[in-house]
Length: 431
Image (cartoon, rainbow, N blue to C red; front, side, top):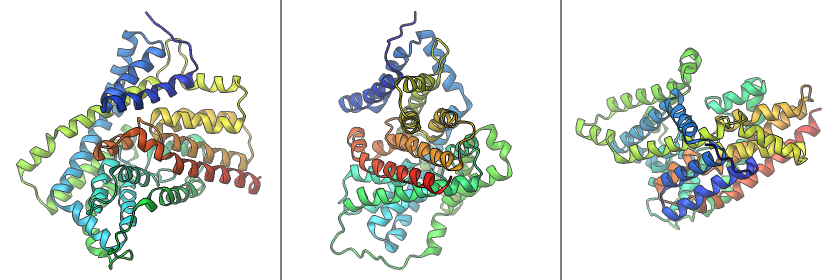
């Protein structure tokens, strides 16, 4: 029997996301919170028990989901290996000797952000945490800095699947898309500096200018990280068929290669590897990611009547007489908020945005709309309680999701304000 609770699609999605925050606050268990919200969304969407079970089964059997979970395992194993071999502490030490604590806390997650790995904030979290040797920075602030600066590149860095999909759906050349989106990274860095980094108080005896950085030693230390980027890029460029087989496969191969390189550099004994592979933390995080993917499946799956939630949302906005510019903002933002992944909001909203712009828009209209749509979707993704990086960051620092989301509103508004300014500037300058 199918039960459909009548309510606007936007309201259903918004309430399910709010439910995650409320249940997590009450239970202090994110797995329970996301699971409960998934059940609520499935009920509201009108799926029968059999239909819902089919959606879950389909999502968990998809190659992308299996590969995502494998990559999550790989990320955790790799970061643990780096910690066990002392690489993390040495990396932090070298960077701290060359720059201030504030700069180090931004540079480390930004460096890891060049790796298009799911849950990559989990990789950078221990690095950033090691910068705070005096424990003078609150866990919440560290979580927000790690999360924010981990994501300053995904507006245009062409190794990210979301960027690749945006280029494909927009039809823009790579160089044009990169130039269009680069200012968003600048805005993101400025927002992080103004609203996050400046809250770090400098110890009176700390040398803000730092000592001379040993770049040669730094290169040796971060060689495994460079290997991940290099192997990923090489596979996508030289063997695109392998990347087409599965979008996560190049990243996993890169992680495994980097683990081998690090093992050659600094061997670990068998017992330590067993401890790394069988860590309870690894399995609990992988289970959480799986539940998040199931939640996303109910956002993306057709309803019992065959319609898609995002299509219904578009129709609702049109019926309400929402202006075009508002649709360009709202549809990607809600998509990002509900999917928590760039690939998801681009895939869900860009066909709608491109469609409503029209078949022959002016160059300025098209470019400005693409920029604003991507920025809006990305900010929605940043505020999403089902964003894997946000979840693992909060799990690592043992901080509260809702409090951190509220604290991120100001930098998000700053980036959106800058995107609106760029939107109007492009329309004025380019006909």
